[in-house]
Amino acid sequence: MQPYDTIIIGAGHNGLICATYLARSGQRVLVLEASGSVGGLAATREFHPGFKVSVAHTVSHFSAKVVDDLDLAAHGYTSAPAPMRTVGLTLGGEHVVLAGADVGGVSAQDIRRYRDYRRLLQRFADLLKPFWLKTMPRIGASSLGELMTFARLGLRLRLLGKRDMGEFMRVATLPARDLMDEYFDHELLKAVLSWDGLIGSKMAPRSPNATIMAMLYRMSGEHHGAHSIPDGGIEGLVKALHSAALAAGVEVRTGARAGRIQILANDNGLRARGVELADGECIDAGLVVSATDPQRTFLELVGVENLEIEFTNRIQRLRCDGFVAKLHLALNGLPNFNGLAQPDGRMIIAPNMDAIEFAFDDSKYGEYSQQPVMEIVVPSLHHSSLAPEGQHVLSAHIMYVPYKLKGGWTEEARARLCERAVDIIAQYAPGLKQQILHSELLTPADLERDHNVTGGHWHHTELSIDQMLMMRPTYGAAQYSTPIPGLFLCGAGSHPGGGLMGGPGHNAAREILGKKS
Image (cartoon, rainbow, N blue to C red; front, side):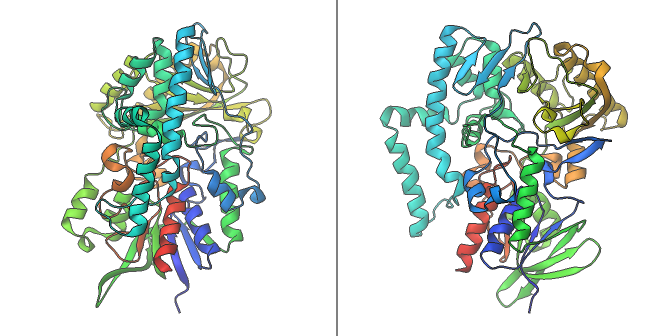
């Protein structure tokens, strides 16, 4: 008798979600996590004595269905009662402020246009929302269930009406710059609104790809894309997921790095039958589910010798280089930003779309911008246990920092980028430098090392038109099953994508349970 029905590799939020659904169906499930704690990029850790932070610092679209299905409220999770403001910072304090359906700091004409823009995009987001929590059928699929999924999508498109259906088809593939220029005059407003289509990606406002689709994906959340920090912080969400998994009977082993997926041959071909840990221990199971990224799953854990060459080539071509660095500052007090009574929102430093584009241009050639664009939050304002009383944590995502820096990521190179980023923030928050007790900069290469994700890419692979929906991560592995029977995917590299959303874990579990029934 094999000890486990399913082994899941990786205890990030998708791995824990998938494990809990499977365990609640009666399976005996083991989750293996290489690091010493659960949560993946959402794990909270101490980076300076008394100061804690996670790489993922806000929530924008975590699935309400997952919250209800797994009864996360019973395990201590409470979503934020209201979303954070998004603030486009200016040096003089005349900021652009987004708060729900309202915008401030722009002309009356841009305010009217913003309401029209938001109403239209929310309609498009609502159209797509049900399909983020469904398996997207492969092209050419012919089963009744798969045809019904396509039919429902077609029906929802038709219900938009002829005019809006045509507009959806046009807008969905527009570069962010084109859409912003169509609607708005205010340059900072354009930059701020384009941000959520770009963050975590290798794309810029002029990129002819999926930036608008990424915005619509994030707008599927309870606050329609606005960011929040739940009660208990990101740590509270991860703790609730871990608690729910344990309550369902899931066994979670940390410090257990997977070395290889055991692939056995039988009369019907190859099949995944367990995991060999890096220390040589072998654990058998009926199924293996990988919550880690597709390249690590197939090229390292499965091995190219067990895969068809065409499939291997597609996996090798996946775009997985991360482009976001993470800056953490331990501060001896609350930073004072010009023109803000409290820095309690999500603050964007990106004066215009050209600033974003120029930073992207530098990164294409293996360099980082001397005028970096970034997103900043002070999470300790929302979750006081992240810092000692009266002190605070500043957390920043610095965009367009290359995974492979020209000349390599040395300690000197990290220090230069950290110093430059602090210099930029201090222009908006005078006195910041005098408040710094400790700083930490994590490049995409550091995220790869610390979190076992290829390229340090937030989404495990680029969220782009050719790597989305029924093609995510690629043909042959886009419906959670893989070319290796008994091996499934449930990580951010699967549909619908990355971010703290939970869709891949939810969908993979449904697919696995459907396969077994």
